[in-house]
Image 1 (cartoon, helix red, strand yellow):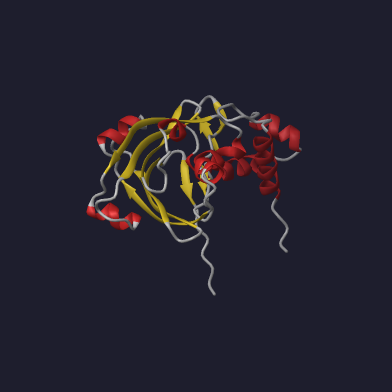
Image 2 (cartoon, rainbow, N blue to C red):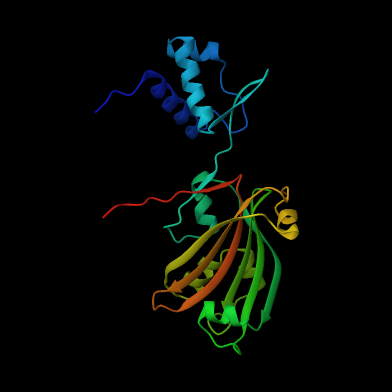
Length: 237
């Protein structure tokens, strides 16, 4: 195994300090001179370490001010079927949802196909804005069969949908089929996420199944590209 370069070892140490909270998001890290003294290395080595972290978008250099810890995007694990709250649990931040639509309606022809129900069946349509602290990061539209969840309420959708399905209803969530599409936001979505309408966002379309193969949900999520990244790992068999 090749020996790791000194500047990469220092970069890893800085990463650990960010992870532990010693270097906080939005705050400046020690100066180059302070880092040189702390690590007993040359200016060139420190600059290589910082360059690596800046190019990897972990740090941000502000001219005439210093080098700051950049807010890290959430790596959305597309292979893990988890709730919004669970996705952010490792960061120990407060999450909440604003429900801006909660309706019982009839499905379109396409939505009936997505949910594998009849066109005359009734469904819930729910629209939520999902927040991290006070930062809106996702707009979610969800369609669910009324027959599966006749006791679904506005209050439930302010909290965790998956917790309601698994703990209250006692159902077993199995899997989802997902599509990821880069788009420009609609005027409504850009307003809800407080972003420039010319800033590309990520749309995720999801069809979710229970253990018995019943489709329990179809959803569309609109993610701010500044807060999320999607990483896929492909293996050659």
